[in-house]
Length: 384
Image 1 (tube, helix red, strand yellow):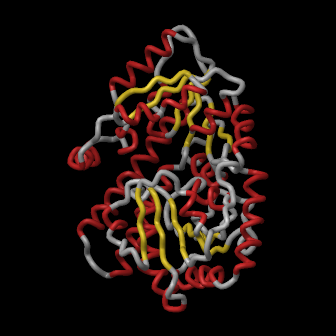
Image 2 (tube, rainbow, N blue to C red):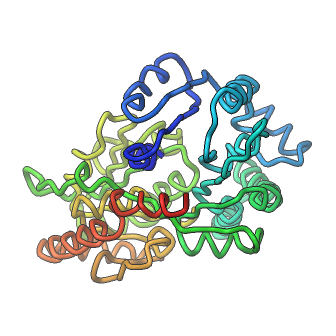
Image 3 (cartoon, rainbow, N blue to C red):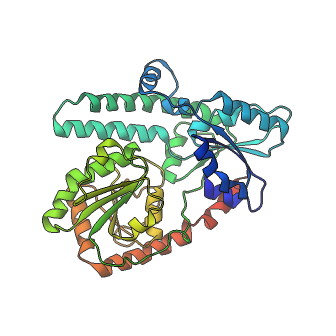
C-alpha cells in the first residue's frame, strides 16, 4: 500500500485515511505526510476471542468484514467525502470494502477495490490443509478441530461477501492471474485488472554474508495462519531430514508477533525465532537458503519477491511461488512439495555455492524487470 501510494503521489493528489492502533502507531505514520494528506483514526477496537466466536456462529458476515468496523472511521470518511471532491476512492483490501461504498453527496467518484487475496480461497486452503494434517496424525485435537470448523465457516461467508461486494465497484484490482480466475467465479461481470505485488529493488539489495553460514531463513508475520503452518511444517517435518545430513543447518524465523507455537520452537541452537526486529535484511543476508514452505494462502508472496531481490537462493513449495508466472524451477528457485523433496532441495543449495550464486542472480534480474514498484505503479495508473 505504501509503495502504491508513494508512486501515485508523484502525479496525483492523494488523501490517505488510515487506522492506527495507538498514539505510537499514529506517530509512526508521519512519513506518509511527505506523499499525501494523512488522516489517522485510533482503532479499530480489538475484538475478543469470545466475541469473534459469537459472530462466527450468529453473523452472516465473515470475520474479515467485522474486523475493521468502526463508527469513528465511518464518520471521518464521510467528512472527507463531503468536504472534498475525489475523482477516485480506493478501498485497500476486503476488510475496507464497505467503507469504499459509502455514498458521496453530489458527485460520483470511481470506486476501486484492491483484493490482496482471493480470501475465500485462502480460507478453503486453510481448512483443507488443517483437515489433512489431522487425518495424517490420526489424533483428535479439540483446538485443531475448532480451527478447521472456523475456516470452513469463514470460507462460505467470505465467498458470499466477496460475491456481494465486488459487483458494486467500478473496478477490482487483483495481484495474480490465479486470484483473478478465482474471483471471476464470484463476480464474472466485474472489471478486474492484475496489479501485482512488488518490491523495492533498491531497498532489498544483494549483500554478501560476512562469513559463510548454514542458516535456512524464513521471514513473514509470524502470527499469520499460513506462515505459522509453514514454519511448523518445516521445523517438524523437513528440518530433521536436513540436519541428519547437515548437522550445522539451523532454521532462522524472523517476523512480527510470533505465535506461541512458533516461539516454542526457539532453542537458540537448531532453531532461532526473532520477533519484531527493526530490519529483516541483515537476517536475510545470512541465508544459505531462503525458504517459502507455504501450504495455504494466495496472492503473491512479498517475502518471495524480497528474497529474490536480495539475490538469495530460494526453495519454495509450488503454492509458495504461486502468482509469479515467470518463475522457473531450477532457474530462479527450486520447487518442492513434500518433506523429503524439500529437504533434498535445501541440501543441494547448502552444498552448491555456485548454484546459489547463479540462481540468485537470475532471480534478482527477474524481479527488477517485472516486479519493481516503478514497473507496477504505471499499471495502476493505467486503470485510473
